Image (cartoon, rainbow, N blue to C red; front, side):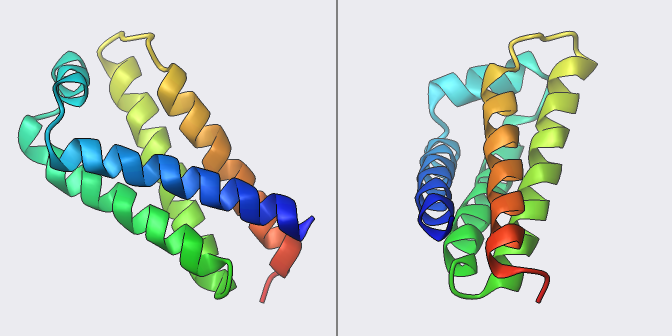
Length: 118
């Protein structure tokens, strides 16, 4: 099960790092989503920082389990918040947030299964 955990963690971390990059450069597609869900564009860099920290935490968590677990919990909360932001304004285009929430939960659960509750 460890190889599955590592592959899924690296994949999730890569997607999160790309999302952080898009936030940092204020990519128009991400700015449009922020506008659609009434999130100020000034939040793009702080939200990108959260994604970057989550990505880094997941990778470090392969070797230091409690950091990975903390990152996983933080990411689950982040994407629950993202879903809430979409639903608050009636935006049902939530596929990306659902995929990332699912990946975050999967990495968190696999990490706990692989490393145990240390």
